[in-house]
Image 1: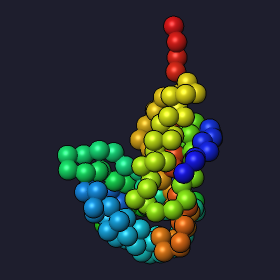
Image 2 (image 1 turned 30 degrees about the vertical axis):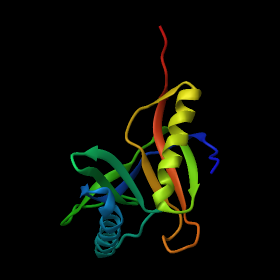
Image 3 (image 1 turned 90 degrees about the vertical axis):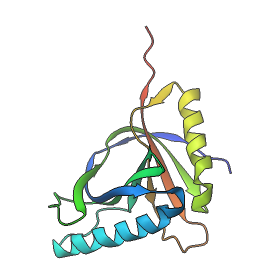
Length: 153
């Protein structure tokens, strides 16, 4: 699949998230539970999501550390496993992946290559925003890499 990568400027957004660890095989289950838990907690506080669900990943000893949830309009008050988080702001390289989640590594590779080819470096952990429900035939996933220009001299 060919990926079109673009540089975007994002505003930081408050969020409600669940944090935890998952093996590569356990990511889908973790996300399903996290998104459901966050939606319940938002509802109890009279809040609604202010955007699509997202997940941010970093490597851990057996898999991934994951932060998953929804952006919010205002401050979320922690309750149970759901804590206040944020969708990062600033410069980010973004692409859209169409299709199976198992094929997402190709989108990550495309954004990483674009950063190198265009004089940028990662400045934080990448994240995904899930535009469509997982049961549609070709779900769209936005892949973001926070970035900054390479400084010389």
